[in-house]
Length: 122
Length: 97
Length: 329
Image (cartoon, rainbow over the protein chains, first blue to last red):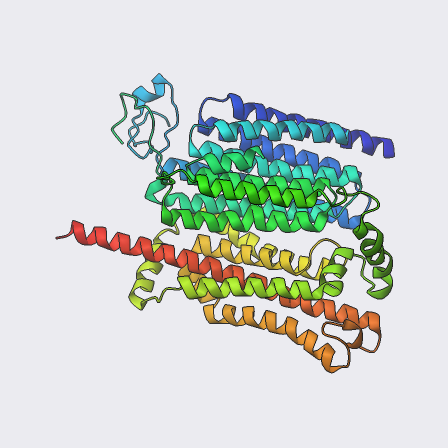
């Protein structure tokens, strides 16, 4: 039983750290701010969640377990909110996403980066 | 296993700092600092377990909250005219800024 | 060191503020690596959190680029090098950092470490040193913080006219739609942050924490509310006069503990005489002064932020009004 706990905690830590590193690689290699934010927002929250679950399985004390649960809930709440606020502020202040030529022909972006309503997307 | 996870978090933090220094726009830098902050929370929790001191978890909770408040502060006060993003290159289908 | 050089050389002040936040965070990590948990706690809260916020508010008022200097400050550089050299020469005489035969490791530290549990009875030695053995130093720190708050009040407080208040309040209400998600999330988080501040305040005897950190966390929650819901709503929730009163009461509480112990026959800040049992007296004394420290730090941080941001709001509001007057002849 204890062996099973150690194995599953190790697995969670491994997957979580792989996700965090891949988020780091993504922030370097992706071409545009919005794509980078997509990479960071998803991998940050999920990787942090998995690492914290891995640590929770290793914890011995009830207080430590409760604090880790609190950090997990905070991360799950704060991560997506931060991505949303960042994207909204960037779009509102004029940073336009880099679109390929197809999308540029169908849509047109006015100066604040908001799409006008005559797009062909459903 | 814990040490391997700690090293992986270090690598991720280092990559975030590279983007923070080199990011062409302001928002790239804010994103990099935010990612650095969440990785720091994880790092403190992991180091607490590695060094056998559960008190570090208080610092981790504190830092998660401070990171959130700082990013909200930055974005709230970047509404002024000074921070409007002016694109470096104009594409032909967009109107002039 | 790289971060410090980058901070001095960069001309874009916004990036400088980000780097300052990063620098505070790196210092906190060093303290964690050196196993100094309390200091890391305070550094993370103050250096990486509140300082970044306050400097941000300032640079939205002063502008984003640093003006180029008109002359080379060679004389200042020369004086700084001479002073730095003299200081380093002075430290050559001191024993190495952490060596075993330094005086503070032979006389002072063992006494604190050995006798703290017996005399004071709380597990956290940092709190016992800060609050009991060196209570007078901590009193000086609290008075310095209070003086800083008074300085900001004296220099930066602006009288507000009621019609300006209504203008700004309606502008803030119109922002509600834009910021809906973040407002709801913040409403969920702020009670939790306030509770966490109380936890840190009272848990300072047993884990890292204490008055300074708790005050900063409390102020951070109020600042979050003020940033998202507008200063006028925050002023209605937290009355300015009440906050100034709390700042003064914190310092007064701290001083009164000292005076009461003198009245009971002991020295200034001698907690042994505060209750019938010396250890219980120590506990009571530490509890009261940590409470005083927490009150003052929280209130002063709130005062500083409200004055900075109120100034900025006034500046923006008068800027908006003048452009409106120009557009409608």
